[in-house]
Length: 215
Image (tube, rainbow, N blue to C red):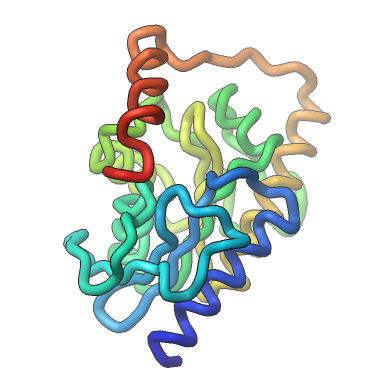
């Protein structure tokens, strides 16, 4: 697959997560392995105006190989997962509501329906603590470590990160994760949750206003 074809496919899957209501506004991001790096969606550009030319090509050390846009702020999570996992060729990050609820509660989603072991490989674990979004590398390392060899992980107080051997499989894993989170919450009833620590609330607002899309 050529560079242009890969960029177009990444954009197609990015637009699909909006059609499926797995995210909204400019949240969520998508990546795909390409040669010795990965192609990722840019930051803070709406899917309906985004073009394949807006994609950013990164090396596995995080440097930009080509592209004029600012890459997604979750780029380090994407690159660590793909760099560590030869079986993974794509990553999809959404802000789907049930998976986000499970992430706020710090839940591990058990393999209670057959799609979970089939697509994810086992239980969907949640990172054990909140890491502020500005700490990009720490957040990436914790997320990739918690995901391990499985195809989905919940980022505490944030949302799901899903992987696959292709863009289509990564998207399917995102759908399975949302369904699994919904079922678990239905079966277990109301879950206790841990809010974002006060010390980070103001910092997150400041980051969004002053830095998001320009980092």
